[in-house]
Length: 383
Image 1 (cartoon, helix red, strand yellow):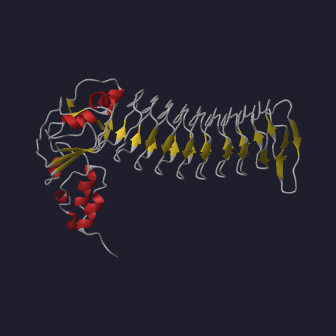
Image 2 (cartoon, one colour):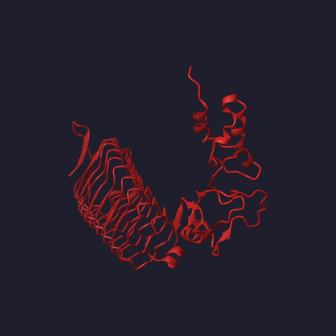
Image 3 (cartoon, one colour):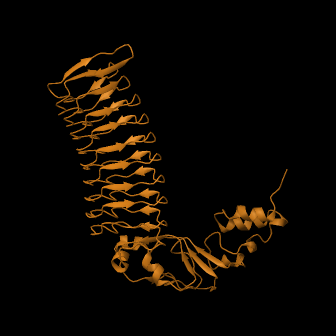
């Protein structure tokens, strides 16, 4: 049986969680002795007591604002300080600490989140920041051009700005809540391929936004993401997206074309509410439930394809779709929610499959003729 040599055990020990793990390893066998001396960086946070085990440290990694810096001057302000209403000046994280051991390092690498102003404050020092937020305070101080080192656009950063275009650096991986909300003159935006998360209300109320490129790295479209983007006419949802949350495209009254990929398994409440220009929708076979008021008041929706995977039509999900005259309900459907097709005045007759065991009140318009019938394909049709 092969054994692990000293080099490879060092690689393994990089993933240890505590100093005790490292100490215990030293006692396993002779070839694992002095494992900690091989490290030129700290694999775990160190204290004034534990640094003595790592004699050859040249690079100091800091994962938390409270990690020991061993006397090195580091002025820090995090994006979370601004969230808490703390607008005081940057503080030395060594303040109020009793420094017992001081040590000069070749480089200090900071992994916890800081704002861009912190990077500027520490310019000229041997400090490298890995998680940098561009905050609303940063924007007011440094302008609308996002620096290339930024990894996160903080919440409300560009909220209610007058910009009509913006360049997002490839370093950015996350858009915070409401970061472009009510940018009423923003016409288009290219989201870099490295962005893997777009928070809720991100583009809410961007009246002039007519097109947006969503990268494949996105797996979820959060609630109110494009709420009331009244100029948005077409969106291509990436094939990796599995969830479209509540009110995502609510009020996008110019949205006429949207393709929902087969990767999507959930479409939230009010998702396409009042998308007045939407004419046709194909629900992918991965969806099992059409949520509450999902297509409510899509007044020009004339064609909707419901797959055999759908078992339930939620409350008012097609309420007020006044142009809907033809629909097909398959025998997989077992319940139709309250007001599901209410105010669909062009829906003259409905064939409800025998599989439906529950039909709520006010489900269909008063003049709609509701029939129960199944043909030899076990499929029920609405003509």
